[in-house]
Image 1: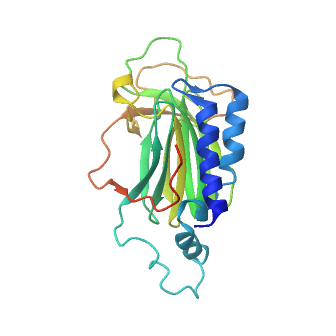
Image 2: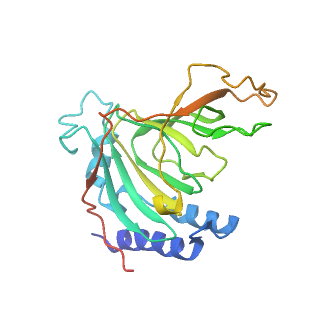
Length: 243
């Protein structure tokens, strides 16, 4: 593994260590610091250059054995790099046409970098309502993002209450996403992942929603993802961190 690869992923860990805490980023400047290093990370820095090269020719009619670089399973795979009380770092490797259903990151700031491939992202933020709602039932949300992304591109950041904290991802080609969560999921601390779907009823509570800002408003309700949705732990093959 080239020394510059070791330096890049190590630098990402180091900037996370001084910029992130158990309550999330220490400041807006800390968010910028993490993003500036995350933008530098390439597939070769985390042991994914072979897969990235294959995806670059995915749409080419001359591409031969284009699936040979990928695992034979169609399951989404997660490569864990590091986790502590302040943050976690890991990579999701998603086969073409696979979907990570609509889910949330409660109380968490999420940094995401698309390492290779193309994907469609649809994300929402909760909408404040004039009266309390039963959180176990449908809640109003507005679209924060709805479109395709292709590598290379810059890092995305979603905050606990804005930027698209609730989102779904569909892989157009095989793709890999490096995620940093701050703080990480923790059921003990009330940060567990919930899944959602759009409610069939347009306005189940009768609340009149303000559409003046031009955002599409929908109602989301919790539900269990299909049994076919599987994320498997995979071996991280990139350079190890010096903790």
